[in-house]
Length: 376
Image (cartoon, rainbow, N blue to C red; front, side):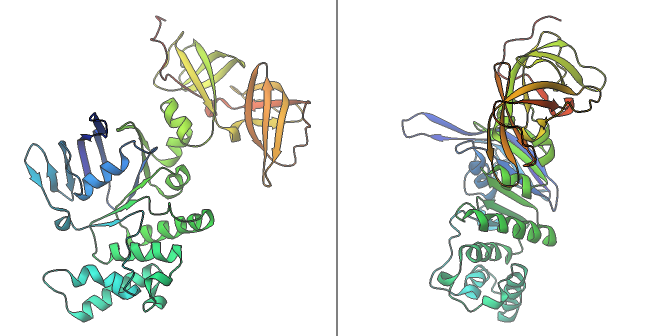
């Protein structure tokens, strides 16, 4: 449905240097799916979104929606933003303060040419207000809405144009934590019910994991990994992705036996030799960094039952913090400290021994910014 090919955007920085905002950005979004551009500030995700919207003109590349090319440097095509029929919700919402809820949503239709009949405008406005659960507030002044209601109003105004593509630029960032969490469910419900193809920009990993069908993680203007939320979280392709998306433990190692048929290999590390899941066909003597999430570091008062390829060792509780539904443990294994999440029923005190189990499929070995491969 949406095809972005080799988008490259640059602009002059404050010091006269060239800022490469998007570098060879390419991805496809199937119809009806929510695709998230995730990354830190300055990584190029908003530039990419604005290029799709037509608010920025890339230096090169091509953007196509439903078979219609809206931008192509090679074919010299640039369709103006108002002719692309995309809906966009900005971080600030940009709601008209002198209009009520109904008038805010109707405004894009009132400005449309040729003009629509008043009854059709009213029907379309009330239909989208009903979709975002604001139909009972149609006559309320926009300035008297709560933050969550204003967010839904901005969304309704984008939807009323019946866009072929919905673009959302950090739409929840101005909300408090509890409201932001509630609005995630609202956004997900509306997007799924209406079947809208949506591009979502955020730096919030939780939002991306909760909302997306697919995520593109960006860094320094480039897409470094594309995949489902589970793939991105459980199978990071490099250290940046593993570190940016959630918390993780990292420890360095050297591959001592190459990948087996199930993708496992043995790695010598500060925790001893461990069996891990290899990425990109690592070979013997390759230097790696191993990532294991805190929730995958299992703690036991007694030695647990072991399955094939389980990594089991003994550590010492260095510190622990009670957080209600779980405990944060710091467990020292040799000179290395592992962060682990455990159920509050685990009572092992600080200074006492605890058994540690890490399943091989949860330990991801990746080659990332390390020395060149040695010969096997």
